[in-house]
Amino acid sequence: MTIKEQNKRNVKRRNLIDQYMPTVKTIVLGYERKLPPHISVEDLVNAGVVGLLAAVDNYDPQRDETFGAYAAIRIKCAIINELRQWDHLSRVYRQRVKQLEETFLELEKKNRRAPSEDEIKKQLGFNDEQFKSAMENSSIRFLTYEDTQVSERNLVDEIFMKEAMGLVKEAFNGLTPKMRRTLELYYFEGKKQSEIAKELKVSETRISQLRKKALEDLAPVRKILEDVLYL
Image (cartoon, rainbow, N blue to C red; front, side, top):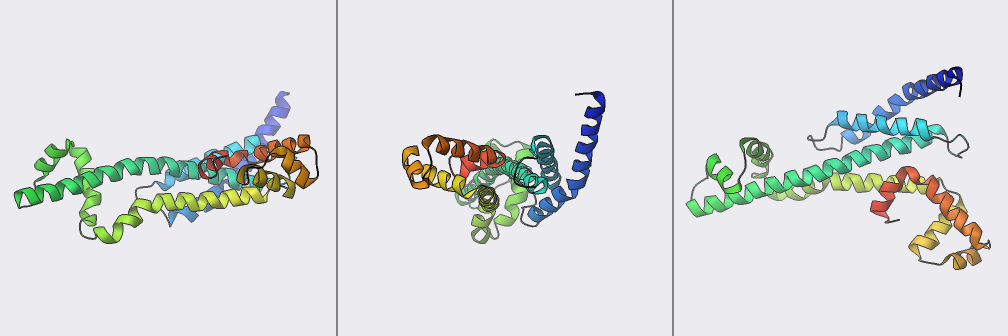
């Protein structure tokens, strides 16, 4: 590739990024209203930009779908993967809050009075920062624990599953009917390639090609598919 061709490619890449940056922000805004306050919107935007860059670098003009549709999937996948990382961190955080609450009640019952901060920290082995971060979230939950326990615990999980299934559906809809049917029969109904070939009236070699091509087209959502559908 000549320097002139490389410069032309870089300009085209930059233009695509500029053109679709508003798409990243629009997608993130759609998540923002659903997220708990401890999740950073800025981190989601950064993740979306990573997805956009991946779309720009990996889009094949020969694909049936437009770049905009392809980019939206890559952006959403990157954001969902970021949410999964936050969910892992929030599980650790929630466990720490739960330990604090249980220890508070245990010491209160034992001493017949509200325990001091030092007593709780000593019992749990928390440092000042760990205690402060857990107590900030726990101070409200002590008052409305029964009402908030389930919704707070599962909020990120629910968002991830809902968005993941939406992306899976969108990705599957982008496949040809024969590719969709091949995956359905192979992965969901457990049929052999010979059986699928007979049903679709094509050769086994063609079924292998269809399955391979379908998985290639689903590459942008492969990590999500592995978690949700165990492909």
